[in-house]
Image (cartoon, rainbow over all chains, first blue to last red; front, side, top):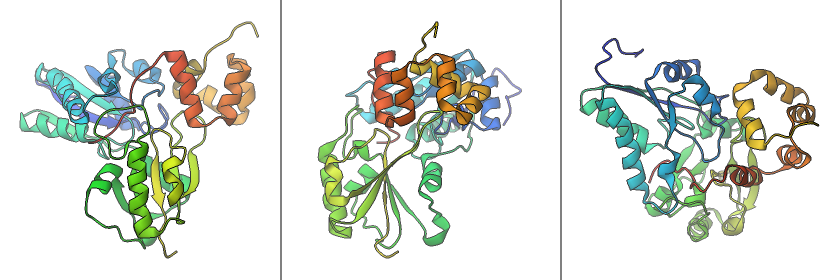
Length: 248
Length: 72
């Protein structure tokens, strides 16, 4: 979908900025940002944003929607409706989120689904996700023995047991068990997560707290910790947890 | 150094300026010096953790936003 020929009809495209702001953007996504009537963006909390305004001066941040203490579902609904209100006014809207808009992003999926349901053109473009950075930074090829991937809170609240002989990645461990927006690590949730992992892997199993480098330069966070020590470990805000298999 | 610039300005510039990024990759400290970053910021970017960098950015930008969580 290029810029729609019929400008009276609104449309939506969801693109991802990748993890390193400004550097991971694809040419395809860049073009959509440049050509959109409205650019609504939501990057990680303190990421550089001037590159978006350089591409499209009409760009507008949605970060204020993430005030601490709000219910996450309420936040997602506001994100979706903010984008759709502009689409309904006939605007060509580009939603920009960090990472890949199709990966662990309810608001982009829902905005595209709802726009299509209402008869508007809507699509999503692929982008670099944190999992792509993890593969590179930890030297992991999921083609070798497979990979299990869960959002941490979903994993904690589900009854599903992972295969302990296949690598496991848990996303968003800093807020595991929580349902509200926050800027603090949920230590109680981490304790519950550690208890569950200890039952499956043992307290001494070594896991990796991982965070992709969130700035244009700099290094990823890679901290090896025992499962038993996880509740007190340093957990950067956008961390994932890599759990190696029991059998190498 | 006749002028002093802040860390968030440098990171913003890096996100859109390929020439500065190349300079940084060749010689990080010189690139930061030329840009006008102070000693503390240069040290932070070279040796600090991502959370330490975030703390500095929060101070500069007076930010109180929450972690951007992707699904609930």
